[in-house]
Length: 388
Image (cartoon, rainbow, N blue to C red; front, side, top):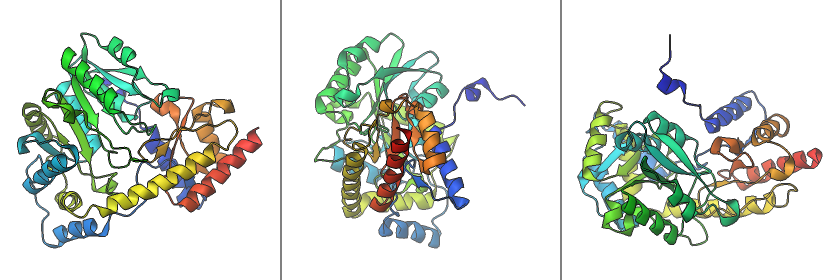
């Protein structure tokens, strides 16, 4: 049986592949420390999990509207007002099966065959594949590690052509942990308005920021840019709800209407008990978010300090997420070679940077206990010492 060319071109996610290999070795009894996971290690907060259980126990397991239940749409609207200063109508909000699903819907809604989407690099592995699935082509804006992976404005403007349809903004960014200053976002907004472009803003890590930094949504910079921005978010990272699979987006009403119709023929509504849990997350006590953020900040500091003590590896300080993106160019190894060696010889799982368009780096998650972080870093340090 032939596979369609549309799907045959898609590459599997290296992040999920490495994580699966690490989990398989753990099941075999191998002592693996995994820095590969793209999810918080915390349990879903108790009041959120209780809301999901209560929904099941009370029979709230039937269909909801395809775009999400009314109560959750309203909670998302309130979240945007409270956190981002954005006032959307209910018609602009779509609840989905995760932020990744919302991104897929957004690219499908705005891209046509032959369009181009500008993606800052390094980039999350899924962005280029979703752009291709929408019939468009990814165009990469290279960013400089020495400048904190910020936007080079001249390079960005030079990439815009008559085929450019959208600019992808990811702040804070997976894999680098970089986050954009207001001035960079204002430039992107001005460029998008001037050249009639859409901005797709992935804000899934907005709450996981450090050193007093506040993530800013480009949609909040004015009515004109809001009306050409699709904001992507979800509950997975902020509330440790990765498996619940609830994301959401905000878009101009005509775009949201098209996405709602598309979703009604693909997934229909997200899981109903998960929607009730997400409602408890967004509308309930937010203290759990700050507790997790502080823990991640402590772990970031530990990991950056220890990595920078290892000869041949350097590590910038991320502003957000729960990843560091060490530069391994001093080790004379490709990122794939190093990731394979670390898993096979040091029993440590990392993700090769080549998956993110940066072969001189590896991605390491600090979503684990400080004990395990130290344990894994001891192994990496020993491996590098023997290598040298």
